[in-house]
Length: 74
Image (cartoon, rainbow, N blue to C red; front, top):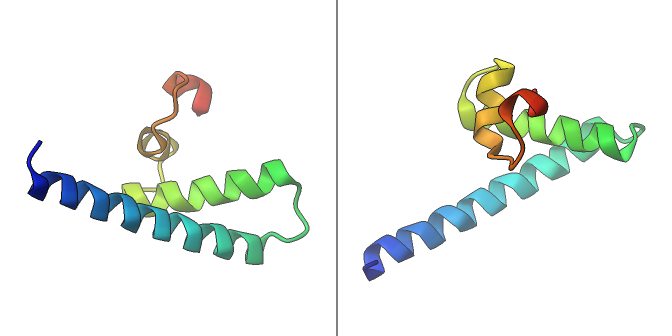
């Protein structure tokens, strides 16, 4: 891998981390009384909708790139 590609990937990773942190903060503000599991669900849904630019559950789960089967995530 050349330096330009590695640098771009580092920048994308940093941007993704910043966005996820902002979404975590936002989801914490809108769901302070929910359980930890519900807060995580809200955070992942908000991130998935933003990243996939779609509200369909299948699109959101594809963006999350979880190690379990897509149908189980849905």
